[in-house]
Length: 351
Image (cartoon, rainbow, N blue to C red; front, side, top):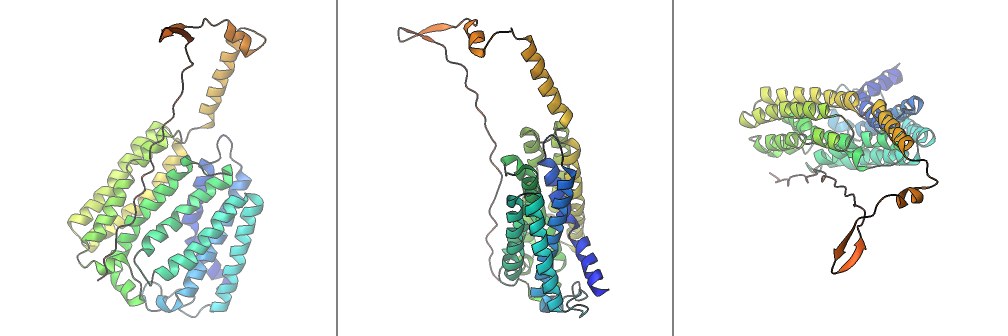
């Protein structure tokens, strides 16, 4: 019964990770979606996430016992032993990675294994060493949608970075609000959070506001890169402005009430953003229309034996350059890609 409750706890805890991974899979699927592959990817991601969370609590069992919000977890409360938790974490971690390797591809499995290592063996110990742990944790949270995209497409492209970028920038105001509200709890637990060395809360609020503003161009980039329609650009901008307003309010009046409002806004932002990506993503019908138009254009061309024959019938324009006649060169197509808006973590000033 205790094992079952432990499993149910981690299923609920891993739902956000699964949702982001599934969204990434759908976005990376292109014209058709392999629903069996989607289910296997979500299942494998959930297993690896459960393994990472279990190892996190194994390493922090003594810290969790000192905090009000974590002292009732299975390990600190004594409802489950550490050997049982390690066995569970090892089993689901290996099974999840193997499932992704067999049913998706090795790239997705590699991302899952790397994220497991980064979460359990880098992020977790950093929480007791340096406040940079929040930025490392944001990287961990940004990988699942990238994993989903890789599982669907077998590669990582620039388009795949939209949702991971949203996850990265979203996590900073989300966790800054949580760290501000639970400052005493984190101090009791021995965690080095950014807010603990910021008595006024101003730097914490500025970090949250800055990362909210980084969310503003993501809707336009999703539209410009052909991932979604123009409607998503408008909706995403409005959504980012809304969460930025709560962060600005927290900056001007740093109280538990404004921090909680920003935290609630962050809880609303992510599911709405992902839903918009799925609703407004470039549909299969639009791609089919483009293919159909290209076929009709080909049918209108003269029935010549080859493209070279057709090219011979096109009159060639000639012009003089330096007194020598030369054929005009065909136009050259140029493609430009907007830079990806990454910004390093702000420097931490120890107290």
